[in-house]
Every structure is written in structure tokens, then in C-alpha cells.
Image 1 (cartoon, rainbow, N blue to C red):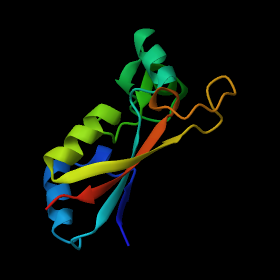
Image 2: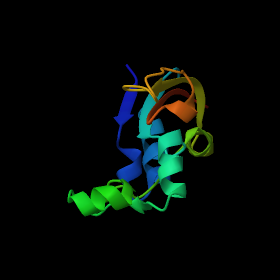
Image 3: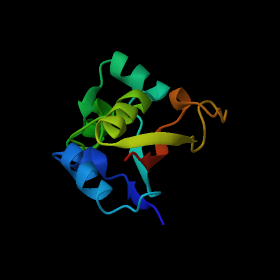
Image 4: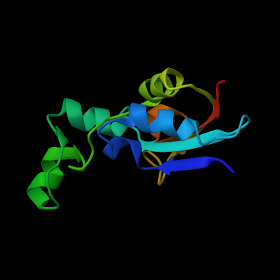
Length: 126
């Protein structure tokens, strides 16, 4: 059974130390599943380029119009940064998944650019 961190890493002050500690709890063939909001999602990129701030500070309409990610997010990940973090902490990313929700313009394209949420299964490196 893998360890699962869904919508967790972006809230942690020190995700590096948490991932390293969790690795010690995995068996030799163990794996971890990590899911995070995807900051490289095309609609988030467009909103940012149009002047939206990275963080929104509450649920007010003004804050929702001005910000992209909720206030509690301390880190912002995309496929490249999440892969780097996992490799740095002793994991080998082996399987990526992309949650497209309703899809961009109704399209469901299996690519990180079109997914607001990404997940990866990674094996423990000895």
C-alpha cells in the first residue's frame, strides 16, 4: 500500500523533510502518491499574465477575481518542480496522472498544461 499525499505538499512549510521522513516508513519496494494543484495549468498561466496575483486571501468576490490559488498554499508546483522535489528527497517518479475536470474549452487532453491538478506515483530509491 503506497503512502498518499493528496493536496498536502503545497501547505507544508518544509515538504523536503516530510518526504524524507516518509521515505523511511516505506518498504523496499514502497511507493508514494503525491497530488498537487498544477501551477503550469494553462488557465492559471493566462490569469497570471492578465494580472492576477498568485494568492487569494479569502472567499470574497474581490479576492476570487484577483487571486489564482488559495491563501493556505505556501508552495506552487508544476510537473518539473514536483519531479525535482521527489528526486531530491529519494524518489523516482514513475507514473504521472492529470486531472482535467471539465477540461479546457471542453477538451480533455492528457497533458500537464491542460490539467489544474497533477498526481504522480514515485518509487523509493535505495
